[in-house]
Length: 252
Image (cartoon, rainbow, N blue to C red):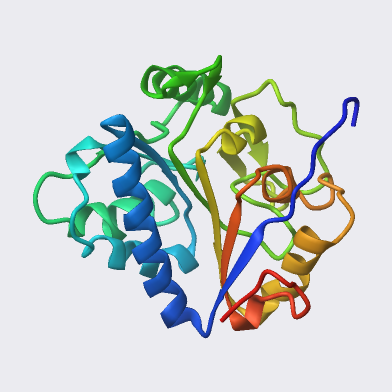
């Protein structure tokens, strides 16, 4: 690190199992999105893809009191596939959440992947659209709410191990270890969110979560630390199977 980095420890909030975790996450997400809308008159919300968040998003659609017409949803990362593809994060968000909302629906600001467009073109177009939506506070573009997952390899969004990510890139393309091209919000924009929440479940995540939360700061090895260890007030919502056994901030 070329400059001093102020590290913090995220609060790990533990639920008994995946079912209770999804219910808890949906309730908290609803509460925090409602608060964002009440505070600013609108909310820009970045949501994760993957299987773990899906149930929570389905339950979120049933929550009352959210003025969804004042919410803009952004997929925090995406694959280089159109929204019609089963692997599209935007498709999952639309199916799990947007299609289940009664009444006015939120705007979904997707990445706009189209046949014939390269990742850099998609990134430039998406960044321009995003910066037209985000409020700028004290010179910083800010999301209102951010949800993230955590991979067993320590990645979050589509920030993968083995690369030192630029703080200047708000939006960028990356490469999955399989060679698949990915699109993602950059570390600085992820950290800008007023509320940052990780959501994960399963024993297979326990070792990784312990390293991210309690281990030495090594974001090239554990990219999730770029957010989890550098955002005061960050919370990690997990089930008991994924919880670091000795973390003092965990509770049931």
